[in-house]
Length: 158
Image (cartoon, rainbow, N blue to C red; front, side):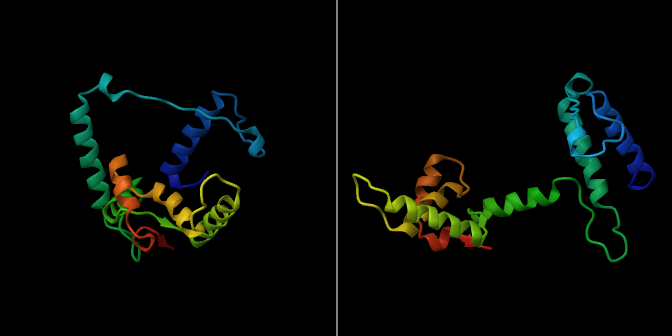
């Protein structure tokens, strides 16, 4: 097992839970895996608002822990993704890797070259139109507003 004494204990609990669904005790490969999901409704045991408050206090105590020498800030699960989401919402766009932009442009060129009863738009405009769908907004109205922005304002390349 891995992860020190606490991590090893947690790993054993996860393995044992998986065996309840038919997984092998020590799977030889990916083909002998299983999935176990435990769903718990905390509202059955405690007041939900109080539980959320206690979770927040617990998470704050973990974040306040001193990192190991030379280490970065101690985080709780999902801290990084929450920060990324907040930045994405603040900026109003998502980063799209250059390879994805290139693939979308090629696809748009292909679609633009297909016979149509209406004139085909410029390939880059078509690609930008598809990329507008990834603009982060709270409603269709936000997306329509974003569609009026120049692509250079909307597409951030990695």
